Amino acid sequence: MAARRGASDDFSSEDAAPASGKHLDPTRAGSVKFGLEEAEESGDHAFHEIVTDIFRIGRDPESNLVLKNDTKTSRRHASIKRQGIRYILQDEGSSNGTLVNGAKITGPVDLKIGDTVTIGSREFKFTRNS
Image 1: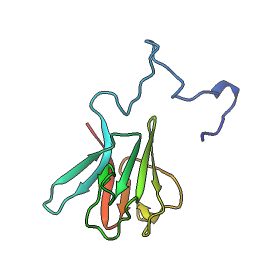
Image 2: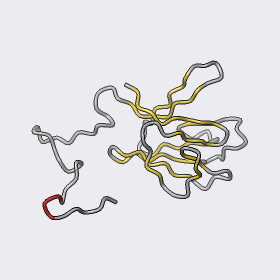
Image 3: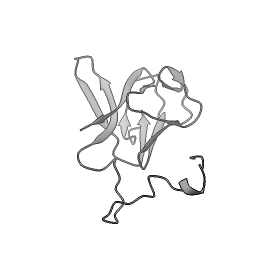
């Protein structure tokens, strides 16, 4: 939750609307896509776009990003919640934990472009693709 700065600043950029009167969601504007990029053994990079407000990651076949055959990944390992322009990573009680930039997370973490996310034995980079 954002700290209040005083009466004259008692609003956020999410409250501001453009002249047309419509609110814009920069996460869905144009062709900008946010997601997790993974380097593959072939040298290629796979981009896993975050396409839902709650993006589930794990071995469960119902996950948005299914990580098969990784014994260090739990069935319901982690999730990313999209809230406006924020992307919040949460470990879902996994056995081996979730890391951001090499540190195990203990609660929700706001992802920033370039953050490294480790789930099981797989490593991803939070990126924007346009």
